[in-house]
Amino acid sequence: MGKEKLRIAIQKSGRLFEDSIKILKDSGIYIDNGKEQLRASSNNFPLEAMYLRNGDIPQYLRDGVVDCAIIGENVLIEKGQDIIRGEKLGFSKCRVSLAVPKSFKYTTIKDLDGCKIATSYPNTVNRFLAEKGITGELHIINGSVEIAPNIGLSQAIVDIVSSGSTLFKNNLKEVEVILKSEAVLAISPQISEERKAILNKLQFRFNSVLKART
Ligand code: PRP
Ligand code: MG
Image 1 (cartoon, rainbow, N blue to C red):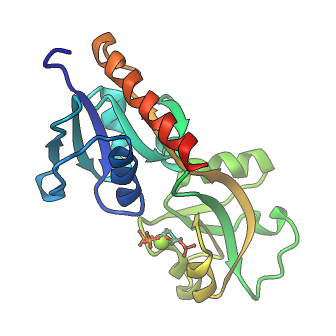
Image 2: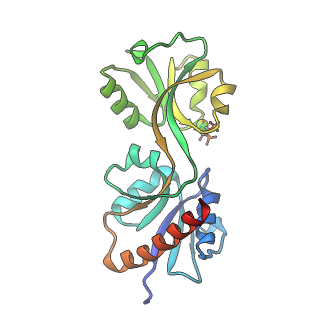
Image 3: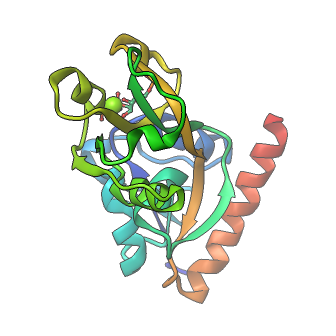
């Protein structure tokens, strides 16, 4: 193989980071792991890792600045419908759900028609509301979404639910699951043939690891 390296985006901070490094390690690919560096190459596989913010990764894939990424499906559904979704990697399982205060007498989605909804996933929420034939007033916030109903910002929220403990601690209840998500290997629509050949090797190794894990 020549000097060509495959560029992979990995979530810099957040819940995917450790499992992303682990699947690479289990695939026999070692990366010098100082993520302060933001870029690091493997010395035993033609791979360069770039540690990026979750929400920025779809744009990097679209532009071909990175060839592939380990990313949550939920982020692709929100910001990267045009990005190729490769294999599911079996970790970082979660759902994107609608939640309301425990005291809210919720029976159907119609109960939220015209309500304020706080979320970091506006596209996902708008698609969901349109499907259900209702409207909502979205408040876009980037984190700590579960606080919104308790401070009077909204009647409902849409956010990621994993263990459910953040909802519980904030006196909220999950009333609709909008989508289910897990980590996937996402692929840039711009990837070159040469790098695609490296990607195939990476996918082969990932698949072996995933098979061994089941
Ligand atoms: C994420 C997500 C939920 C929570 C879900 O937030 O936004 O709030 O985790 O996990 P749980 O169901 O296991 O409680 P995170 O802690 O990453 O912080 P942020 O929302 O402020 O970014
Ligand atoms: Mg949160």
